[in-house]
Image 1 (cartoon, helix red, strand yellow):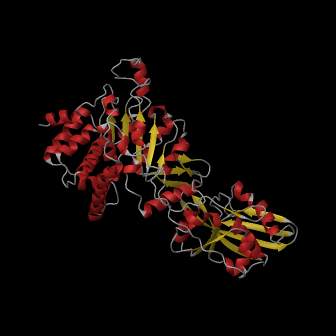
Image 2 (cartoon, one colour):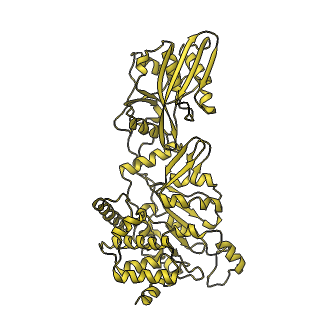
Image 3 (cartoon, helix red, strand yellow):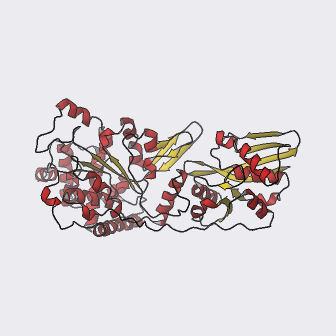
Length: 522
């Protein structure tokens, strides 16, 4: 007889439904699996045979043909085991075949018949719901994430025997249950711990308010890493929709713990500078998300930026521009979201002491040029805010008064984000932050006054800003105005934005570009 069950395979974050057709008849032992299946799927015949034997279903004397349709879609992963096993027992008459209709089965089987957890269950269920599938059965260990999907009846199972008994009507499977993950009890790094570095703190607040990428240049011990690790603490909490996206990505990557449901914590990823291009942006055989996608809706921190591989850094250019990563393969194209705040930190030279008052920098001009050449102009052009961190003065370290705490700064950031959300709703703009504004939307919400136009004109002439750099200044200026609660984009906002756009890498203090531009513009 022939029986059919429903399963799914993931291409990136997108689930494609797979119809598992099994024809089983008594005859010479034979097991054939077709449908463009990779090795892990083909190996399911061993797991399914053993698991079925544990529940009294012996297919060793049967001719079994399994077809995974559509045949031109590559099938990956071990999640087809449960669907193959149920279609097989349906074909042999061990369970009613109509009990399989309209149910998505996802789960890996052990040799003894237990149902093992899977990566990407949340993404599979969301995709199945989009295809109007109403019922699903998933491993019990995946219950917390499966419970996040509304509009579906999701049941969980721990063993193949339990599932067969349920389909026979003898028992009932429990409904998937979970809860939103509470904020961690571990102390969050507070911005009030930072001593000095007023300009860097200001740049961090602007980056958080507008979702802008940030580059910090300073000597060892200036506080670059300390500041970067405090950025998540001043970001607004994730909305439910954002948290669902983050959870789905981490589920596909296999990074969700067994008890974890929807997480409200902003991701913070800090890969080592030896990370490969695939590790940073994603890819591989059966594309998986890289660090840039794992940091979606959060922060990607690249410390010692100049030490990263040139190819890996250049691969960031498209995700930073588009907010997503597209990985093309011969038979499929996977897309992962990558809307994040990139925070980079680097030393001013190879030894790290260029510009130090002690004069201990021993880098020659050639060595300095080689160090700076590790970063391309197009990559730096995609970083909105640049800031120099001078060495921290001893008096600032001995100061007992703390700076503004993260809670205080976060309130200003949330207020600025709310202004942006209200403006996007009012104007019909899709971008939720100023950093994500398109050129057309930017012209609508960040039109400078005549004095501001003169400042921008002088900045283009004197600082050789590119067209992209010009747009970055407007976006940062709009964020500065939002932090002040100003509807108009004034000259002071643009002047500060210009000063945060360009670095003088030969000195420890930022050249007062904004003052020069203002005086040049009259």
